[in-house]
Amino acid sequence: MPQSTALSYSLGVIASLVLLLLPLQPWIPVELSWIETIAAVSYAWSVWLLAQNKPIGWWIGLVGTALYGLVFYQAQLYAEVGLQGFYFITSIQAIYIWWRGGHNQTEKPIGHVSWRGLLITAGLAIAAVFALRSFLIAIRGAAPFWDALTTVMSLVAHLYLMGRYVESWYLWITVDVIYVPLYASRNLYLTSLLYGVFSFMAFRGLRNFQRLEPEQRLQATEQ
Image (cartoon, rainbow, N blue to C red; front, side, top):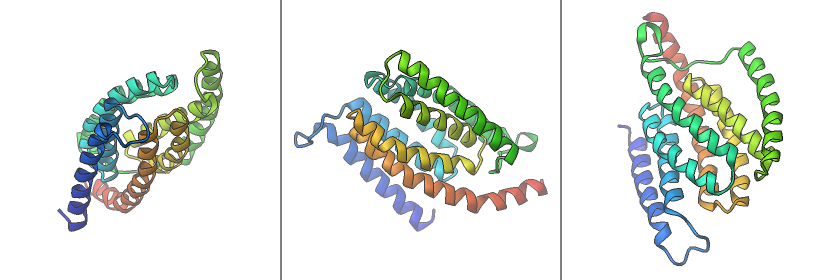
């Protein structure tokens, strides 16, 4: 294991322990629930591992996804609840795609979405945002437009990441930045902070995928 990677793991373990102890600290100015804390730690490890192109990140993400479904339900972010359910089901599928989705059921290599695919996705996403916004207004959800926008963007980013596409990280960087003030407005301060960290992880994931994609494309053509 490279020294920089080992250092990152060590810092991650220390940060996880600190976060897990936060709900016990009386000096914390905001109330933190155990569910949100464990979900945040699980999600952080999942994103970091996926940014390193490690399939085990999907397994760890299942824990965070299930717990965040409860957190967002309590915060009345109903679109996010549905999103977590979608994440849970498709993350199981992603495990198979990453390990056996390549040629002759080999590991799927990192790739790019075609321009045609990007245009079709953009058109469908815009329509979905406004449709979901109308639904959230009808059920009196909090922040209907931003909830709808981040939900749809996250869906697309997740589907792209399932396919191991570089473009997924561009979307994750954007949506993570938007999530920071959205979650803070719902008093989910730990989650808001976490998504600020996620934006940096997503940038790291983008750099890693950009670096690995030419190598894996060459290996795939040689098989």
